[in-house]
Amino acid sequence: MSETPNELRYVATHEWARLEEDGTVTIGITDHAQDALGDVVFVELPELDVDLLAATEAGVVESVKAASDIYSPIDGNVIAINSALEEQPELVNTDPFGEGWFFKLRPLDAPQLEELLSAADYVELCNDEAH
Amino acid sequence: MSNQPLGKTALHAEHVAAGGKMVDFAGWHMPLNYGSQIEEHNQVRSCAGQFDVSHMTVVDADGAGIADFLRRVLANNIDKLKVSGRALYGALLNEAGGVVDDLIVYRRAAGYRLVVNAGTRQKVLDWLAQQQGSDTSFTLTERPDLAILAVQGPEAVARCSAALPRTAAGADLKPFWMFEDGDWMVARTGYTGEDGFELILPSADVVDAYRALVAAGVPPIGLGARDTLRLEAGLNLYGHDMDDSVNPLSANMAWTIAWTPPERDFVGRAALEKIKSAGRHEQLLGVVLRSRGVLREGQEITTNAGPGVLTSGAFSPTLGYSIAFARVPLAAAGKATVEIRKKQFEIELVKAPFVRNGTQVYKPL
Image 1: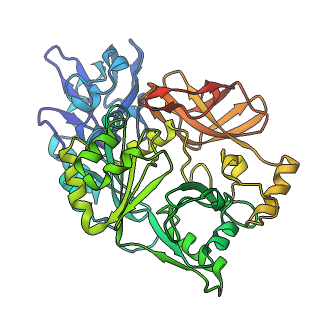
Image 2: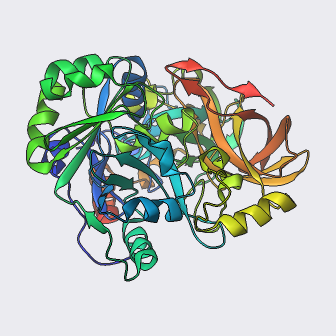
Image 3: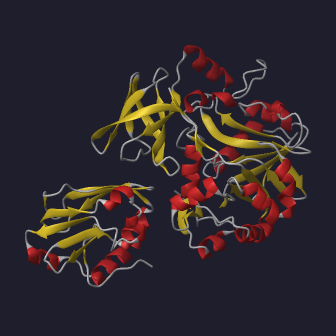
């Protein structure tokens, strides 16, 4: 079974968002998503200092199976990208909620995060998709 | 698609127990991978793995008239199989010269054995029956009671021989030879570009054989890795790289057409001769992309000689970048471009195979 940590927020396009202590938000794709994609072979990340809008394209994941767009869960300014993924895209598979993170945002609208799916809601959504 | 339940091979429960990610493949519930497709690919290139390909269709072809029949329906010539124990790769063509299926033919002590694709099973059985008509001088008998295990990789022959003593004599076989021991057939053939065996054996024996191989360090490999291994090895996949509408000259299968003797009138010959003499065909080439992206089936490319299309594409775990096959005009060569998600990337047209026995072998054109 896929993991879905309770402390994170989720969106229907299978990204997770984590509010850090300094108010920034880290983004990645879920365990469920990496499992469905299979081995990740390339990751295309957003550029630093770009403003992303919620539900707009922020990058691309290429796996052995398919290419998938990554969407930003919230509005924010890109303050960091996980450049380790360039050499080790497999981190997305092995540690999707840790070393396999994609990028960090400084939120433009902090309360937006509260509107995203809870872990329970996300699990329910994945179960619905499977049936 | 039909509403029939998915077929299950005799190893289905083993795949599930091994954590196989099961998918619908040509009407069969088959393992795509058991975790990491890339690790499985590398396991076969560097050591050994086993594939359950029991979903493929085995047809035994026997009787006084069978050789004449096969001389007529195969574009390759079974007369190349001078003695029993030899195997031949070839195509069945339709009257227009399109590929009905690709298959392997084994010559047995008496008669022949054909192994055709799973996805084409009903079509091919119907086609062969139609070609046979009312001729009772031979029989075509499907063998759903048999399983097929492909054991592939540089260590495959040694580990298989140790785990399954009945296969040990296969270590002396050359490629495209086989021997039979009772109801087991051991062939030095495969679909990975590595050394190994394909074992055709009773379904009743296959679970024990599978377990003995696992215990000997030959883990199961899913269909995902089978696809990247065959692509690296420059081997076609029916329904992708060729089908009923594609002639073998346009599918890198010219080497499987036996033009001599000229009096052998195989099905599709007349159409194929016209296509060939008029130069009215394309070619299937290899493609490499050295930048960060993955070539996929259906992507359009632009060559020096006009447009083309990718028929298969994937990330190559052995090479570390993406490779593909492309159907392109006959004069295409050198650099070309591919469009991936609205962006143009430079690609190179090459002569496949890309990888043989674990090593890069492709040549620029």
